[in-house]
Length: 139
Image 1: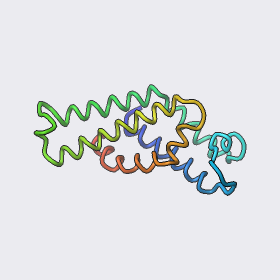
Image 2: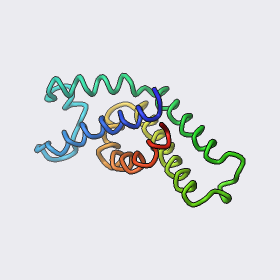
Image 3: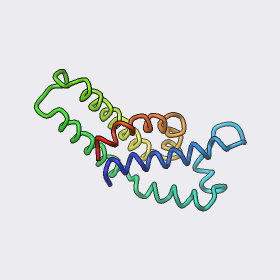
Image 4: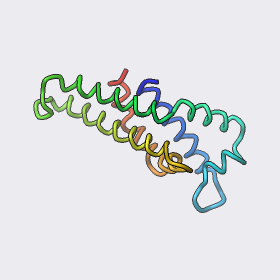
């Protein structure tokens, strides 16, 4: 799976989790795993299951490697200080993408709701911000 597909899957998963949390009327902290195991409609259960099958830690690590390769291509033989402002912005967006992908990888390997909680509590918003710049650079 390439970096673009991983970013897109994180956006899908984050949107599903955030939407479910926003619709929760029980109050308190939303438990997405419990929701999936009991109350979630079948379509949501299937969609999340399919996304998680694709979002294995190895796939996330591979996406990080793809981002690093693109950063190296942007640099070429120059140093960061020698890049134009436009290229620095692109490099910075890729750095942010790499950080978010590494965070997602760590959250994915953790037990429980770590990945869902991170996405709902701000990870999704951060991924969407970097996706607008990073995805065109990674295709």
